[in-house]
Image (cartoon, rainbow, N blue to C red):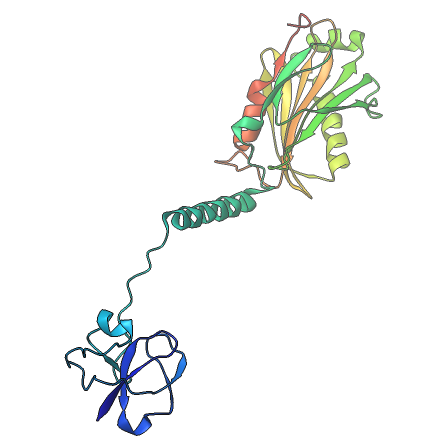
Length: 283
């Protein structure tokens, strides 16, 4: 047999076995310990409400709850819309950070990183992945006809790709002779010694080289394996113009995302395609 009792904490009514009347029980409504004190005038689950004052919970809950009954159903707790938006934002941010971290230092130069650059003397222009820093270059000891020059190099903060434009000024008398050299007897040795100098400076291993031309100018494209990954550069001999020069345009990165037999990849291709010699001086 069950007796109706009222919780002294929340005032709600529930039923307990007659044997536990007067002892401490757990209120199934608020989960607080309360004395099982019978409520006068209520004899069963479906008893009519008495005329004597009872706790207000009886008026709100005519179906009395027993300790043996399951917990009353609770309304669902919907997730606030702002919480959903915040969770989506966190997921997108983590995804973007993951993708960015995977590509960091891999040599992928974003389109927004390329900056047009013209040398201070206006003799050539090209696009570089950042603002370059200038330094002087000494003559090549293996080529007495070189007179030294300058180097402008930059390294992308995200791609970690290093790109540069540098040159050696050449002896004007030798340059006139080289301009008439159709067989490369004079030009090929100069390209080779400058290539070897670059190889020794970076500690690279030559894996591919091919003769190229820039307009009427003869040149050499070289691919090397280095400690940092891959290096591709072009040597262009410009014998005309006010200052004959041997130009070197190159890029080095962990990977240059090569496609096909050439290891240039899109970054090197863009670098080489943007190179222009202004033989008449500043544009």
